Length: 419
Ligand SMILES: [Zn+2]
Image (cartoon, rainbow, N blue to C red; front, top):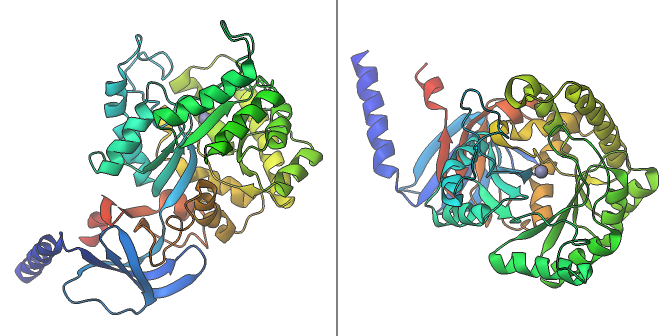
């Protein structure tokens, strides 16, 4: 007993001594690098990057050894659609949308949203694309996280989502205004452009298009001219068709697309982020949290069913699907539940895992530094209890440890170690 304690003390001291070693060697019993499985893998990390991934690899002298041999290692996952700055404190008598009663200062929003960022990391998500935030809260979070002053996933952000400029007071040329607003977003610091191409959101599953093809085209062209990418939200098929015709890079939500639209989406290699689970989250929280009106759950369930069928058709037609949680308020931590829908609609577990890693990295234009575990990539690594290639729920609920850029940001392995 006493000897065990001494031994534990020694281990603790060893860990603390090497905690700042620049070189880390992480041992996994099984590792899926984004493409294949490697048994007894050793991942060597220098500062924030991976330098090697080898079976039974040598451990450099002086390296800090992190023993994850009872876990499966995977690349940090990517959530393609979040709302990190939508924060709710859960105060009794309030709903997420009725709180705060008065507008909160953006600095407070940034501070409070750290909780969403932390829960996202705990879900094994080390990168996110955030699509719509007010007052520059998303720019601030991204920058603070990149500076190492805030703990959170890498953020690729859009600033405020753009809408139609037709019939806006003072706007005489809506197409010129649309292009100007795109430029403005990039001047502010946006990485992406988000367009609300239809109504729909929360308990509202109305699918009406709100941005014309011409306006979408003006925004797409201005985005591409600036060397960036654009995401267009459309709940319904009309906005989806026009978004694809206009040349969007990613299409968000879209339900009830016809075969011709789906075919065009696959042919043009538009990434489709169906966000199916997002409405399931609303169904689960409709009464207790959101206090949606009567009938809301029925509408949401009908939408989910059609959303799923559309996504299934799209996958069969060869479209590239990417998981986006559309997480808001208390939805953080469930980020990867979308993968269970992807498997249900016909993906193999490995295809689903690739949609959240290698494919999502390509969608971000970051395929050379994110989404895979290989030399030169960021050391964004997740340890899972179980094998996600055998059971997709492992990727959702089995996250035990997360490294981001070479730093351990989540560690739930200690409790199991002492048993
Ligand atoms: Zn959204």
